Length: 486
Image 1: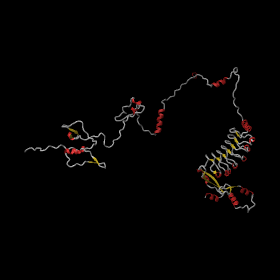
Image 2: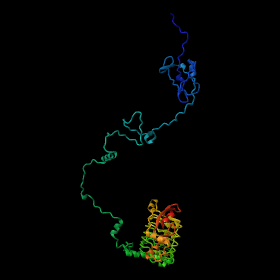
Image 3: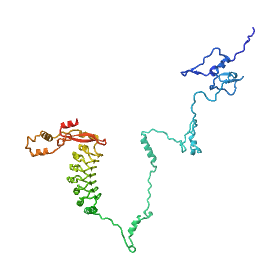
């Protein structure tokens, strides 16, 4: 039987087009295999699979030929050298997506610091590991590799830390060494004295000394002698004022227990300052100064103001701050020309509604007192300045005054007797009842007669500065109070 003969040339091996043709992505991001076209086989298939566009193609080509007959070693499979086409064009710039920005190379801290650049790094052999980087501080020092064994403690970290601290601070000394030094070994030294004291102890030389002058110590005076000396100085100031016909006299900080005779200055004295003295009572000598306009009695232990102050009809300014006043009598507000009244930092708890009589008052200073409410008569004054700081005028204290207290029966009976005009029917009235009917005031709500305290209630109003302050009102009867509130 004759052998079979091959009548055609063998075809070259097929090239795996999956290695050369890149995969395409659809709009959803999934990879799709390229469709095979009919009639693509052999070299024609390879030529049609290579893209002619100028795209960056990543293809791994070895530098040497390992296999025989000019084949490249690609692992499991092998490709002939003639089958790889090199007719693609590599562009100078990448046309794909933008890559990550390049980062600068980090310089170690050891090279940044000039002090550590030429200094050796001392680390133990156990600390240096493969693949790790040692971070060096500014001051490099040898790392101690001695570690104590961990132990379990029954205390928390604060108690244990204090115990360890005491153990470290506690010395190892067990005995106290005492050395007895004899007294003769210590030199005897005289106590040092200042040079001035040494000169006084030596005393002056009587042969060389011709004259001694100096100020001796002031002898301690008794209370009577001291009072006489202070009064002598005050009388001298009064005489100088009278001699030069001055309209102002200041006896400030003379610590006077009483005021000297001022009758010689009554006709022309306009200004008198008696602040910072020791006046226990209001000086009645001041009430004889008919032309006085400014009176200052600050920082004196005065507790009350007498009624004789009504004689100072020309008084415009009255300063009695830092005293011990507990009330302001109504005759203080009867001064017709009073413009400024300063009673700050006293012990005032309440101000009468007679303040409405001071029609010329433009400045009222009530700081530092014990006031919970202000009288409603202040609303009728032409005030330009009102100071009420450091008092108990906060809204939290208003609750105590919102509760109405009932009136007394005698006050209600007196009001009923006057309103119904029972005087005409009962002409003969006992004396005690006439006294009750004579104690009549003015109602703050209806301006009618008011007996007793009436119904006291609180209303808040804003002053010209926008400050909301509480004011106390007194109503003569419950019906008057209801009409005023509604």
